[in-house]
Length: 471
Image (cartoon, rainbow, N blue to C red; front, side, top):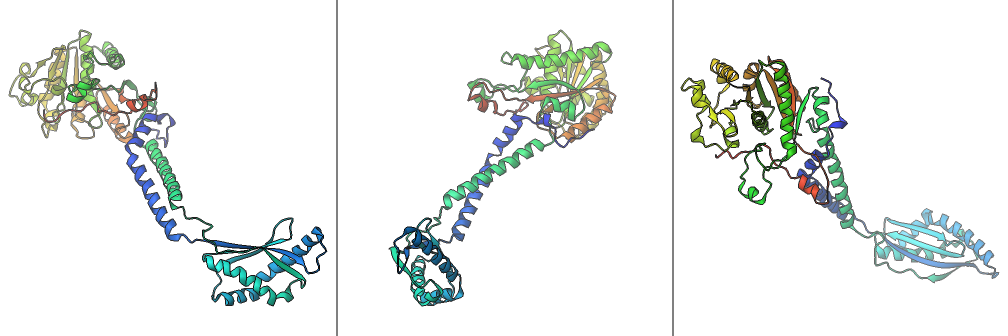
């Protein structure tokens, strides 16, 4: 089999949205953790910075009054002053004046553009130190005047003050919320990638491309309970084409599968035994098997359904048949009764052979001569025999009986079983004496947005084959 790392035609929007909605708590949790951790880190690592500024007019002692000359003079003075500020001499004097061993401050001398105004700024984590440092700088100018232009005069234009607000305001809430959003988006992308890369069958195209088999039919998602009353009492236990509330599309899907079965039967009239199985539980195999039988019966065919899933029988629940009216098929296989006693004649024209309670260790019954004899007799009595088997990945019952069937099909639920397990089941059916017809893609959901509220309605998830085990 050709195994693709990523099949773009297997990307399904519904499956992706379903996974993201189911994982909303993961996205929320990661976002909340990002907010809390970033908030704690920002608060713990925050160091406030305070800036004090003084502005001075720089003029020569013998001012000419010409603005251009004063600008030129101020430029040369500030250049020398900047060099002086970078010297160890000035730094040592400032530290001595402020009585600190380490001057943890950023000091800067600059000229305001197109003026003869000099700006002195000091930034540190101590607002008082920032203020005092400016005074020390200007005071030490006198002692170090020999390094400067001797006739420079500094007139105070704007006095420095002790800053009351930090330059870098602490905003942990805003920043941490941004971090939380980023964490949520990253988690969303990771979960999307996981959903897309998950090796399940999500689209019709993927059945033939990834499984390299025939798509026998597609059964779209159908709601069990379409009215408020039915939702409350859970009155509908199965999706059957005989129900008047089923959609035409749902009924037509089974009619199409029936036509393909009839075509195979017409080519080989002696072959009439159809085996229906799945990889895992809750994929809808019993629903498919029973509806296929009902579709054949509606065409006037005599159909017998054998519920060979004796571990978890479902047919009597789906048809709402009382237990006391059903004779367990185990009794027939054990030789305790005859075929006529086990056969149940349903009102829809289908005859059923089934169990009413779960049995363990049914493999021996499956491969027994009694089972072979039962299937052979049913094949002669009916136009079609439909066999519902246990899931193939759970037990080996289906493998024991698949050689007794003429045709076999595998029901796969959208985005449910893993591709590897599906391929293993297909290989078992292909290696058997039965002709493998292909896969039925069940419970297929697609997004059709008709209005702004329909998206949320479509995302409603319901099992195709769910029964009350207490019955």
